Image (cartoon, rainbow, N blue to C red; front, top):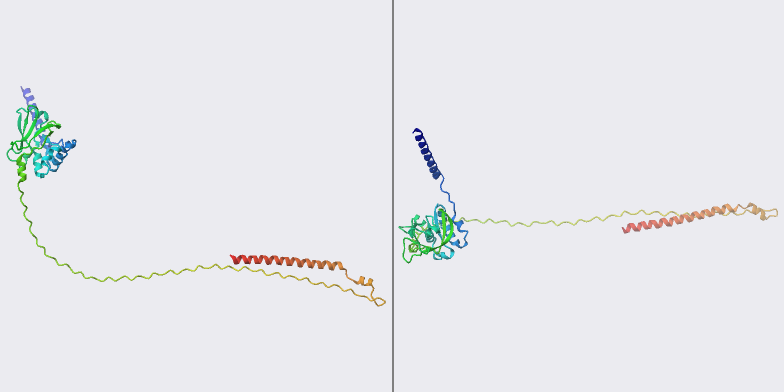
Length: 322
């Protein structure tokens, strides 16, 4: 008996501990959003107007913070009734398209009571009164499903019909395509109410402040400075050094050689004989050789003089030309 009591108490403690652990997890770790409505609708180009209005009215953030939700999406052609309406009216209309529960196509077509009333996101605002934030869902025998405002069921209330399913993440989010927008008359009546005129702003008298008088100080006109004119630099002319002139070599004139005069020796008869004259005459060959040598020397000197004179004049003319 003690053993059975011990085992039962042990299981009870384990159950209590497990429940306490789950409670701590739920409290400490909040629910994490696992979907983004604008990203889901970005897969379908024909729903850009509906997606843009959800982002502009901040309804997308409210949808993403929910754990279980159904969005009745309208394509671009079905958004014509809200064209030209204010952003407040568009926000209220689209909030009626967000059901705070999970409904996929199969669940909508197999409703038990054939008609139910569901709560929408518009009921969480401070503008909804009574059943204004609720929508009636009716399943027809032929499989069609209609949506209409639960507050205004007159013929003037605009409802919509189910077309097809777009996105389905079981028990988190379901996005279905409906024919047009749900627009009950009370939303339009609220939008037609005259807006309060803003209070006029107080008129503030502006005291003119005297402007300080600025005295103009004459600015001296700058005197143009004299620009020095560069003086041309004379290029020196190269001086040609004179070429020395060779003095002409004096020409040695030949020295005349005196011709010996024959000495006449008187003979016994008083007149010189030819034999004596021939014996007394000097030898001619030696005198002739010296005279010929003097003539040859004079010819060499004159030739050398002419050559030197020619070269000296040539050098002088070249130096003058250069």
